[in-house]
Image (tube, rainbow, N blue to C red):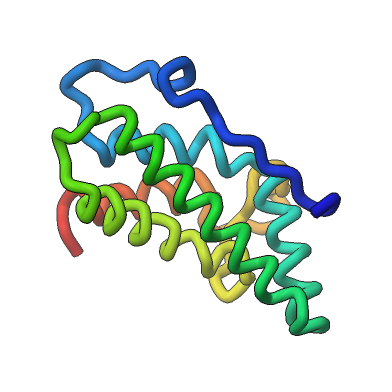
Length: 140
């Protein structure tokens, strides 16, 4: 547990969204707040460790579950019944599922803090996040 500390957010205080914003808009802001460079690097390192030490896999899954659940709870709190729990569950699942290849290293994405000059042509994390939400907004 010392390797990764996660602290939830007080959703009402941290979201500064117009009333007309969609759950997708809120989730995109949540992802930018939650998935910091430090957290992404720690998660990547933990996944790397879990490949060498499979007994760590349940811990990794627990982290992903906590992150996804906190986002879903934030959406449910923010929209207070305007959308079904199933909708927010599917939305959070789709977004966090799209983040797994970044964390496990199967998709080469430049994390915040990496030098783009040393890695020309690689998609940045922000670009990947924008692409992910673009697909969710416009369909695949």
